Image (cartoon, rainbow, N blue to C red; front, side, top):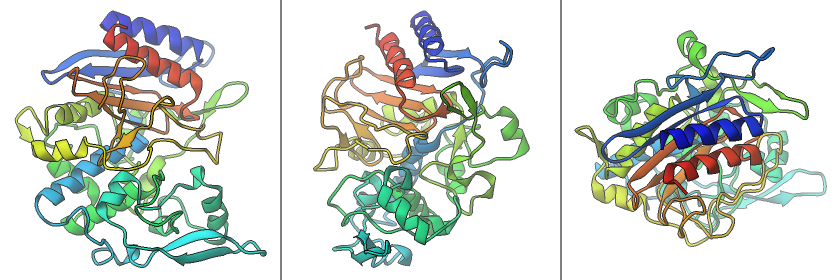
Length: 385
């Protein structure tokens, strides 16, 4: 497997003009393969520092699954129910407004939402919250309501649909983080360090952006017509964020994230640390939505393309994960769990075949074909297909 993966990455990274990638594979018993191929950022004059297994990545939306596990720990403790009205806990979520359009002067037209927002809806992206880079309507609304990225004010946006009626990818998991903080009485990163990343020995995963972390961080780049060029932004607001973004603020290593995936594969425990009960993992791994999930249309092509990781099937969504209902074309079994980060990092958890896999790159736009070619070749190499 190791040789297959290394060869697949070398070929597809070079073909896609992508500097490098770190890939790790494991199962319930341990790590099966670790590979770092290419350089840490674009080469200059044909040279660049080699990418290493312990290099840090902005894992962006791969944070969502970790934040989801954190709040499910609080559900297990009886502090909140999945279908409780969250308005009583977080008044900011009460009496939300739905954006219906704009009047002749271009001003937003709003109406009250038809029902309350619940934790289940936040975890399944059926709350009605969206992302500006996926919604021209929210971008237009933001022009009338400016807010700095990483500020709490940036979370105060209208819904795009009534809660429970549509699958819309957006800031729902940032609100999951806010729910967890309110219930736990501490910042999300502190809860994770005590109850998730700490027990799992994910020592390199945090919301931090100090000088030591910056020195190990793989540079983020964006593709232009001529080359990949530096793009120095920090998802979730970085060191200047007013809150810990459960939707996309963590920095970590591929090796750390594999530990998290192996915990899911092991029904909630790893190396003697019990993170969640097996029945909670079963709930999180079961489709919770009545509509297709995972399909998105971009509003900002330089950041992401249109996304549909399984265009031949109608995927489901659990309490934090995309679920493919049929076998994938590159090896994973039906019922696998997956998601990704906007800087082209990806993971999947395949209980049927006892496989968990993570691959991290660090460039935009998300979901571009060269990056997907790397991911697909990696998956085929893992399964030997």
